[in-house]
Length: 114
Length: 112
Image (cartoon, rainbow over all chains, first blue to last red; front, side, top):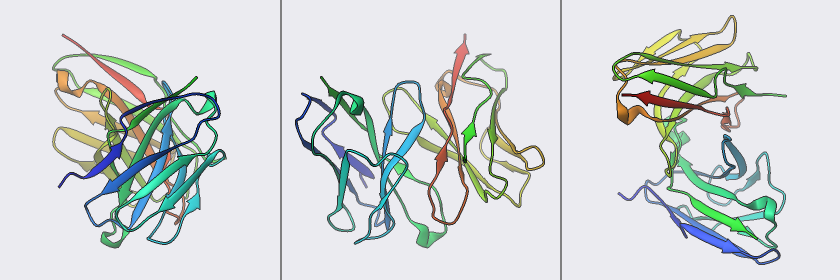
């Protein structure tokens, strides 16, 4: 199992550009999450998908959109990137059906907006 | 609002000694707590969890203690090794929507 994979690993955007961060998991988990982590800080939830077909806003959703494409894939889109969105983005998944709250994380995407 | 915070942003420990990382939480209704370890350039990795009906839980070289009276959580690492160098996060689940609320993290530095 690859676990949670994210692409790309690094990205540099100019202000106003758009891009989509991709995330996939092969653990058959129901729930998936997108977080951002700023330097020296903890993780903040952007959006989550409790199950296929549903998405909900987290703590910091402004400037982002998400798509739960199928059970495996959950993408994060920046429509018009801003320097404040410079951060490391982590995707995670979990399976509530097993009564486990543990979230499994991908390696992250380091995004710089100039 | 709800928050999970840490007392010490950086902790330096001699190799071989025990490490204690502390965490304060604000929501007395939180039912579940997790400790994660994040090595440089990697995503967080689960270490150990504890439910609110427990005071203590032990894993391999790690112990989590929960004091609900003062809303305090701690992670104890026995015989700290160089591989334990990382940032450690505590997280809580304050309600049933399954969202984790994360603390800011403590950086553990191992002195040789």
